[in-house]
Image (cartoon, rainbow, N blue to C red):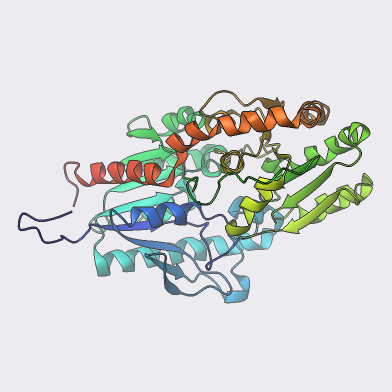
Amino acid sequence: MTSEGGATAALPKLLVVASTYPRWRGDPEPGFVHALSRHLADHFQVTVLCPHAPGAAPQEDLDGVRVIRYRYAPIALEQVVNGGGIVSNLRQRPWTLALVPTFLLGQWWAMRRELQRHGHHALHVHWIVPQGLASAFLPERLRPPMLVTSHGGDLFSLRGRMFHAIKRFVLLRAQAATVVSEAMVAPMRALAPHLPLSVSPMGVDLQRHFVPSSAARARNELLFVGRLVEKKGLVHLLDALPAVLAHHPDTTLTVIGHGPERDARQAQVEALGLQAHVRFLGALPQESLPAHYQRATALVAPFVQARNGDQEGLGLVTVEALGCGCPVVTTDVPAVQDAFPAGPPRYLAPQRDAAALASVLLTLLDAPEVAEAWAHSQRPALLARFDHAQVAANYARQLQAIMEMPGAR
C-alpha cells in the first residue's frame, strides 16, 4: 500500500478475536487462527485477542502478530478453552460453567480497552459464540466493521431457542460472515439471511510443511490425529480394529491428540485387548505431524455428529494428510466433502458404523499402492483451495470490503 508520493502507507489495523489459539510457539493446540492471522499480517497490522492460559505470556509478538491474552480467572482455574475445546470442557468439567460470565466479561473488557486505545479499522471474530457475543455488546462508536467466521461447533451445537436467539443477535451486528464449508451455508443462512456470506476455509501450509516424502510408507500402520472428543469418532475406529486385525494381524494404530475422552478410549483399548496394537502419543506440535503423515499407511478420520449436534466444520487434518501423500479414510459427515476438492473421497464409510469402517480399511490395506497413488493425485486441487497465501488473500478482500461499506468508520 503506497501513497501518491511513493512512501509506504501504514497498513490498516485489524483486531482478531478468538478462543482457540497457540499459547506459545510449538503449542499443540490447533493453530489455524494464528496461521491465518500471520498471513493477514501482509495486508494489515494484526492484533489478536485471546484468553490467557497457564504458562502463556500475557502479551507477545508471535510471527509478526501482536498477541494479547486476557485474564478471566486465577491462573490455575483458566481451564475453559484448552485441552478439548470450550463445549467439551464445559460438559466434562461442569464446574467451569461458573467461569463463563468472567470469560465473557474479561473478553469484552479487553476488546473495549484495545479498541479505545488503538481504533482498529476492522474486527475479525472467530466463532459466533462466545467471541461474537462479547463483540456484540461493544458500544457502536467503538466497534469497527465486523466479519464473523464460524468453524462449525458454534453453529451446529448450542441448540435451542435461547442459543438461536443469541446467535441471531450477534449476526445482526456483523457486516459479513464466513463459514469454512458448504455444509454450513444453510444453517448460517437460516440464522442471518440478510448477511453477505461466503465459504472460506482455513489454510494449510502445503508448500513447505505438509509435503510428500520420498521415503517408503509403513505397511498396516494407521494414524488418528485430533482432539479426543465425541465428534472425532475415535471410539468407532477402536471398535473397528478387531475386524481389521483378523485379516491384517500386524496392523497398528497411532493416536495423536488429547482431550476429555482420553481415559475412556484407553479403557476401551484394554477392554478390547488392543494394547499391543494401539499407542497414544498425546498432543504433538504441528512441526511433528508431517513425519507421521509421511510414514502412515493411512490417516483415519471417523467423524460423527455428536449427541449435542456438534460436528466437524471441515476437517483440516484430512487436508494435511493428503498434502503429505497420505491416504485418508473418513466418514460421511457433510462437511468432509469440502476437504476433497478434486472429487468425492475414495475411502468413505457411514458414520458410527464400525463394521463398515473396518470394511473400508481392509479395502485400503489390501491395496495400499492404489490408495497412495490416489492421495498424490489430490495435491493440485488442495493447493488451489487451501494454500495459505490464497486463503489469506481471500480473507483480506472480505475484510477490505466491509471496511469500504457505507457507514464504516
